[in-house]
Length: 342
Image (tube, rainbow, N blue to C red; front, side, top):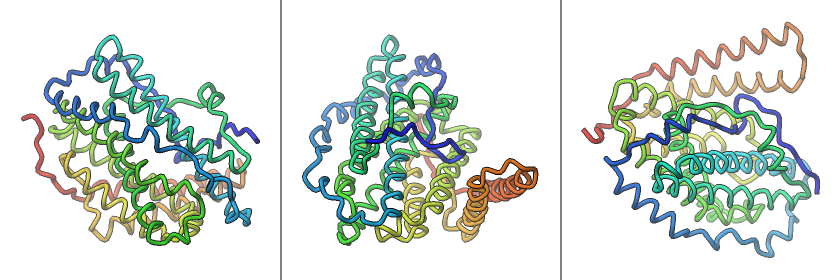
């Protein structure tokens, strides 16, 4: 089995994160402690303890006669494994730092680290079906860590877990109706798997509700709007670059992404003070501009040319993406009407 050390990092690749652990240790969750306790009790039940067990269907890769298809799936598994492992490392470190300050929160983050480790391990084992695996130990030591303030961790992780839920459950339901497109047995596990993502999202929602300054202020509205757009744009741009993966499982990438974005936006309405107006025709038109420019940017990256002409080309494409992103951001948002702990 070939050992991989991970792909080259770009603006859109899954990242490893670190944060201000001392600030997290000062969290006061009294205003929503009961809900947090209830969610941690659900974590303790460990509904998926016996779910991630491989069966004989994994022994057959007869549908992967096409090398191009095989390469597409290896990349999907690698990116997914890296993202899950990144979550494990972050949650584990937060839990370790919280032990002396909040037993309850430390336990909650420990349970989520358990789930993420289980997901990453299952994905890495799946990669071995293709005679390849990720060297997670090497990644831990050598990958660059991106610093995020604690509040940014709460916003983005809440959204990442919720959007993960909608992605997994949508793929699962599609393949249940169209089993001829289920080219790999991993997808059978998505129904229960996505419930882990959903529970993790609920945990961060409960945590955010205990910090009213992160939801009830004018500044918090701006941040909520920014991270909604950032998470949606990242997914949209990544997926449009990998259209062949979704085609291989019978999905139209744009229709899939639009559905997931709308569902996640609706989920955020039950927590965030504002959500994005994704029904505005300009919203997806501008996202498509970002996507087209990102494809051109990606093609220039592949050339590995460091010349001045290529540099200005990249700058030109990037300026289009930033301008379109800003135009979406300044579109009127939709107030949710929620005021927490007032």
